[in-house]
Amino acid sequence: MHWVTKTRNFWAQCEQKSQGTSGQNRIKPERFLDVEIPLPPLDEQRRIVARIEELAAKVGEARGLRTQAMKEVDAVRASATNDLFSDTNMKGVPVIELEHIAEIRAGVTLGRKLIGETIRLPYLRVANVQDGRLDLRVLKEVEIYPDERQKWSLRRGDLLLTEGGDWDKLGRGTVWQDEVPDCIHQNHIFRVRVDQTRFDPWYVSALMSSPRGKEFFQAASKQTTNLASINQRQLKSFPIFALPLGRQRAILAELETLQAKVQAVESMQTETAGELDAMLPAILNKAFKGEL
Image (cartoon, rainbow, N blue to C red):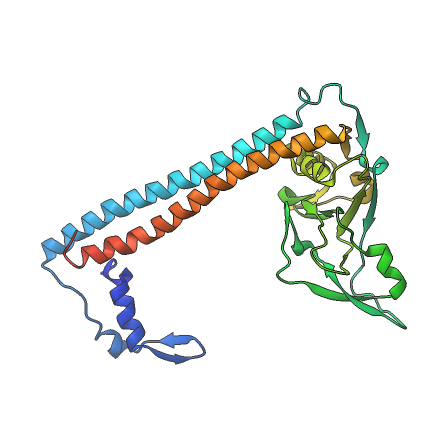
């Protein structure tokens, strides 16, 4: 009975016999008892169950191998990134603190009481700034004074970093590419505007998001239970390897090649996940058609 109730046919019959409104369907007990199920002899039922459980165990094992493979891919990516910024690879390279190559600014404080003329602009929240990307599906607006627009406006190439959150996500960020016109940022996001004649913002972002960068943020941050935060003073002291622009971009090219390979593996793993999800329903369908 456990496996019968997981079949497509069983659920299709329940759906046909159910009723409800606003997406909250229910089936009355007497109609539930009218659902038809295959009922072979008890010995055959037990044989089917044993076969289903044997195959289900193999599907579970495959899921476990897939999960382990993804962990290993992440480990390889972290190791390769760490190697690029290792002491060995950066031997002899001068180090400069972030404050000497960039303007660092926090954004607008929400909930202010404003008097007089204001304008409404879209702004980035912490939820919009992910590790290596932006999530702009939900973009809110805030009122500011007209003369504050310039102070908090974003420009192409600005590095965006979150002030805090879960300790393992501390200092997450990405590079702004003018995705939204006239956009500003809130006070829990730091805007780092690097000197692009000397530093590629993507290089600075890659260094900050590397295991080496994350170690710095975790060591420098103020931490409470499961939460951590950094302030401008700590961010300003972030050490940057002062490489020539050409070498910075060579590192970025290596990272892009690595990322392309990782994405190819992740794409295959996603396909595999879909195949695994389809396996158990297919097994059950065959089992209760007498084909297993």
